[in-house]
Amino acid sequence: MSKTPRTTKLAALVLPAPGAGAPRLAVCAHGQAVPSISLSKDLALAKPEALGAAVPQALAEQGWRARSLVIGLPAHAVLTRRRDLPPVTGTEERLGLLRLAAEAASPDGAMVFDALDDGAAQAVLVAAPRRALEQARAVAATAGLKLAGLTPTHVALAQAPGAHDAVHARVWADPQGPEVVLLDSESISDGAPASVVALAPLPLMPSAGSSNDSDSGQTAGPAAGAGLSAEGWAGAVLRAVLGHGPSAWGSAPRLRLAWCPADATDAPNLHAVREALAAQADVIDAPAVDAAAALADAWRGAATQQPPLIDLSAGRLDPPAEPRWNGARRRLVWAAAIVALVIGGLGWTAWDAQQRVAKLSAERDKLEPLALAVEETFGSVRLARPWFDQRPEMLRALADLTRAAPTDGSVWATRLRLDEDGRATFSGRAASRQAMLTFVDRLRDAGPFTDVGLRDWSQDDGAGVSFEVSLTRAAAQEGGA
Image (cartoon, rainbow, N blue to C red; front, top):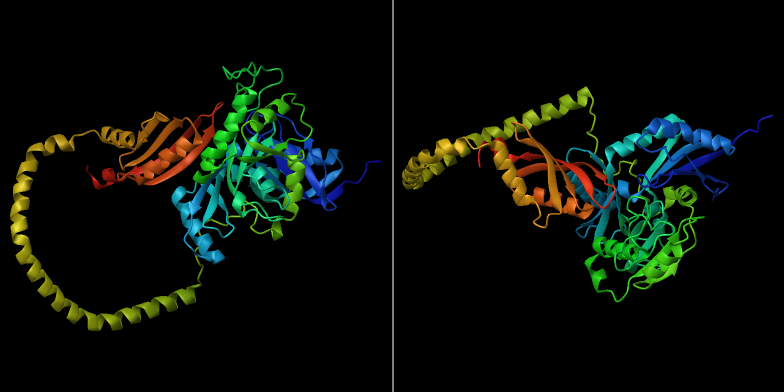
């Protein structure tokens, strides 16, 4: 006779970096997390129906049935960026400022946002492609579960009370998808949640049996991204911390890092990597972590935690919904507005007409010399106008993009589509995610471009990034320059 499944409120599904292992699933029951189980390596968020069907099946095999599902994303799937905020203390005011920053970063709505905000002078915007949220909802729907949250796994774990020491960063040493979570060490107090500064992916760890040749920095590891030696991997950690962290960290005598090994890892070279890191920073050993089980346990208290855990499915930074008025109220507002306009307009019209006549007379006298000078200038311009009008629009757009591109060769184009109305789609590659973000910022600051939005990006096998940007060339809309 089959055993009746036990029911739990929450299951946690942790997704690995692309090509770096299998998803893991855990439940939280009786106030504590149950050790996770591994799903098939072929399952991924990009296949939401297959992944969603596997979740209840795996739970049933372990004798469980869940009601809701929280999904943890890897660092490769999210972006984090610090934002300065003016000295406002109200929660709604700060949310409004962060909402404006989110709309400016993705005007076409291709990204979803949430924020790490503990009331300090800086907050951290966290973003993921909207398609990741849609896929997460499809996974939960296929599994027959409510989507409880979508969050960067190790940011949620770093925010949990008591999950940190006074360190600059926590290094999640999982050979299948190592990540580094940067913390604001000055704001950490005993028992208080960590203030997260950024989340960054790392190269894969050296494979077992690889040689640590510090001169060449290469190993015989077959996995993509596993060519770094232990010393090279430790250097990648420090570069991620200093590159994503506040500039003041660069002057710190020695960085303090918490070393968090993955639970039950069988990587024999893990100790060598830790020792290489300890030669360049102060390393504090933390207990081994089962990420899926820890996420289930952390999310169990997410509703009451302050500051709240990141939840990209909550829509906290979505544009506010338009108010819905009934017909009677709408007609009343229109009638009041018309009455006010009529009353105010009667007194305004006569006075305004007199002012306009006097102003136009004075301006006419001032503009007569300028009109003569303009006419002379037009005569000179007419000679060059035929060539100017026949310039190829694509050539002008390429020139503007070239001026906005960095000069160090860290960003290059692969495709440019330009429509007649000035809207364009730019596809390219960058040497790193930071180079990509810097290029997008330069496009926003460049005069000829408006409506600049990062539509999509994906991590390549190495450190490179492929991305797509939508923009409008303002000069083309205005018909010139």
